[in-house]
Length: 64
Figure (tube, rainbow, N blue to C red):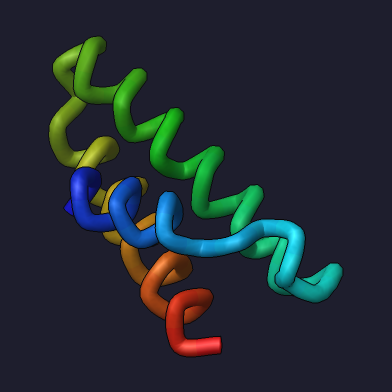
């Protein structure tokens, strides 16, 4: 999930997004960073939740 979210976010042109979509992008990016930190801390359930949220937001942004 984390890899998918990162891949999807990298395919999005941030400058082409509206203000609300940019905010969603920023949140998704933050979720991926927090998920990576949770993985390093070996908090797998929390990392999974964050990665899932990031992937969902990234997928929504790709549809725009």
